[in-house]
Length: 102
Image (cartoon, rainbow, N blue to C red):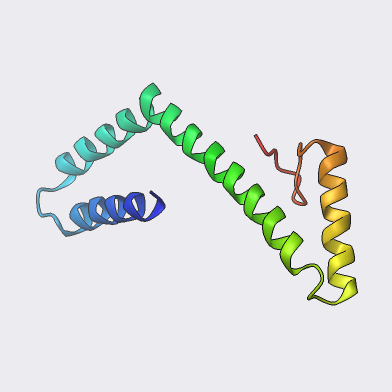
């Protein structure tokens, strides 16, 4: 999904920069992009994709840390364990950068 979106954005930017249609066409594209980004269906889909990404990333984090914890130095394993415990106590409310996980 991320690569498709990047491709579409790159295609749109390339078209805008390469076109000879001028400012009018640029403004038309800008208005259309704004309308699409403000569409409730698009916003709901983007939020749903973000939630699924967070869910799968969390599962992968726990799976990988469980499997490799006995193969890494104890200092790294202790750090992972402390992060996991802190995440469990905070309920996943904030990450290390103070951003919300919702």
